[in-house]
Image (cartoon, rainbow, N blue to C red; front, side, top):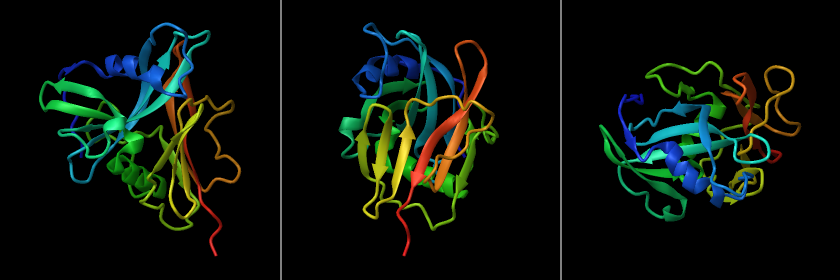
Length: 220
């Protein structure tokens, strides 16, 4: 169970993302510096209690129109071997000390717990509360077997980050989530699983939309 500490983080997550977001191919902000604001998200628990896992939604008003971005993050007490390219930055936590903050799509702990969430073996937790399920997060799985643990090939596009396994399974992280027009979002055709969540729009209204979609190859 992840414990939410009421303390400081220097620099803050939003400050780290201000510098990092423009380097991403799925960022569509204006020519100036991003102006990210926290808009929602959820957490997952690392069974070993070593890695912080957060799916964070930020809105950015620097472009012609406000945009939302989904940023999976992991927080570690030491560098993750071989993941220098995925390091967003380091920050000083008021209780835990120095933390290495990573793009979670490249962190095997986040990938494993995301698979567990899709399968129903893990529960999404409230972003800012300890031991409190996030009931706005929904998931579904077609029960075609376990989600592969080796989703290790990561490719960024203009709209999503794609994680793929050797068996052809693909997990898409929808980096630019969009509100579902009519209530809770439905899975896309041809998908075998998904995760949906909620965030706050710049006008203060609450939106729901897909965060993750899973596609698996036909099974013999």
